[in-house]
Amino acid sequence: MKIAVCGKGGSGKSTIAAILAKEFQRRNQRVLVIDSDESNSGLHWMLGIEKPPAPLMEFVGGKKKIQDKMIAGFTAEGGDTSLSLWKQNEIPMDGIPPIHAAGPDNCRLVVTGKIDRNFEGCACPMGVVAREFLKKLRIDRNEMVIVDMEAGIEHFGRGIESSLDAVIAVIEPSLESLSIAEKIKALTEAGGARFAGAVINKVRSEQHQDLLIQELTRRDITELGCLRFHERLVDNGLSGLPVDLQETGAEAGAIADQLLDFVH
Image (cartoon, rainbow, N blue to C red; front, top):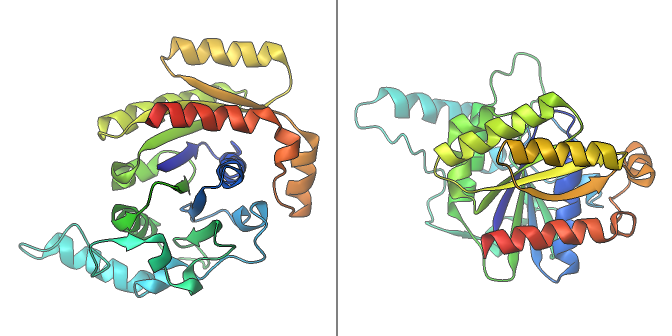
């Protein structure tokens, strides 16, 4: 199953992606986490991985080569606009070069690419890499893919969601967060993909939780579960420590159950 975690900037989507990865790992699934956000930098330590792997961008020749391929594909008559970057038709989990996959065998991390320098240009090449990699990635019954998407909705213009089994939105107690979730749902469905619903994150009171559920219902968005505000998760985030399933308790399990029910 391939699941994308989306949300506005600061919505804690990377935390939710890491928590889901750890939960499915606990259930004896082989998990591959794909960091498709070109700006964040902390997903590896949330997963307990010492350092991130070499970006997939390098696997396919770097940003400049991909940009050249994009230009050629869009300007040459009969050019290949699908930009198939790998020669093989499928890439199994075990077929990812070790330099591009960090972590233990049952929970590894792949990074598509990052913005590292001034005047580097747009992030479109990273989106192309993510789309083509997900399109070719083959998973078996006991394997799970969690994709931490870039913040916002720009990635929907690149067709990344077309290779996913489910898209979820992470929301926090704000009207802007709800509005982004509504757009994520509309864009997911318009692109022919499946929108599973929203995960509520960092609520401090039952009043806020009830209000968010009410607003999600009004927008015809399924609530997949709620992760309340946990001081220890915040402390771990400040210290660069992994997420802790003992802290989230049954909350992570309930969200995972909802996702499995949706897909199956």
